[in-house]
Image (cartoon, one colour):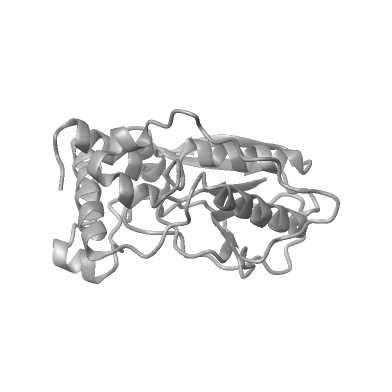
Length: 243
């Protein structure tokens, strides 16, 4: 079973995928999974973390999979993200209709994978949308299909791939990560000590409130504290917390 996440802060257009014993998603606020390309994988079942930013295959120029093409990308007729995100909308949408890593994004990737004959489902972990797909013996074909699906969803305008965050954006993400930090403490967890905002920005947002949690704690914390940047910013706007 291949398992991936569409990250709201993944950067760049080349995809990276890694086989891992435990999926530890470092996406959402303040970081992206540090992963590398699959090499020599033969098992019929593999566990994969993915930023949907897929390996060393550049999507620019077109990914072609023999005998198959991605289905049309549906564009929401009445998207609500811009209204809900308020002053944060441009930062997250970057010209797309929905944010990178949103449910709409993940749902298209799953439907695209299914159209290529893979058995895929959408899931959610700590508020981050994930997908699971059975690779069987078709790991390389899956890689190609994923890359083609991501290219299609970007080219359609549904999402725009994230860029490196500006200092202003990192400041916003720092506030979001502090919200996660407070949530973890309020629910009895012991998150890693937050850096100063200056240190956070200088590091490119590398601090992860979930970073010191064990695998079981990570799973339990994800049940009560979202890591979804969109959800956190929507709540900040609803509470009147604006830049």
